[in-house]
Amino acid sequence: MRFVAVTACPTGIAHTLMAAEALKRQAELMGHQIDVETQGAEGTQDPLDPDAIARADAVSSRPTSTSTRRGLPASRSRRRPPPTRFATPTT
Image (cartoon, rainbow, N blue to C red; front, side, top):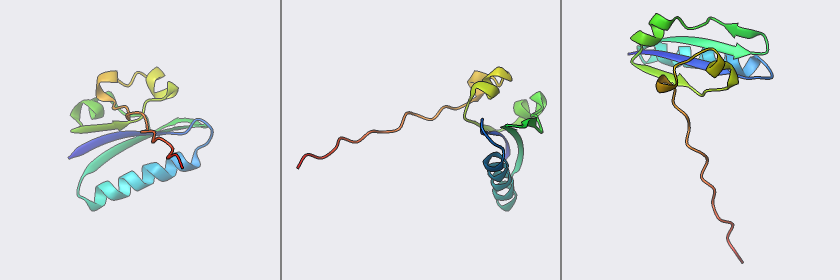
């Protein structure tokens, strides 16, 4: 399978790069291809090619102000559902 992903951190770059490397390593181990765009304090690195997005079997992105501004198609991005909140037990 072909994947594309965007990893982003608005305040730094270390976790963004670590996430990108982890995705690439796991994709290779599983026999898949992946292109990863990183967005951080230093700006966008390795921007995704629109053709790569179109060819992808799956797109992984958690939209941020930067990825939305870059024009990542909203229909191709997946938002996480809001976290479930549990009621505090009464004693």
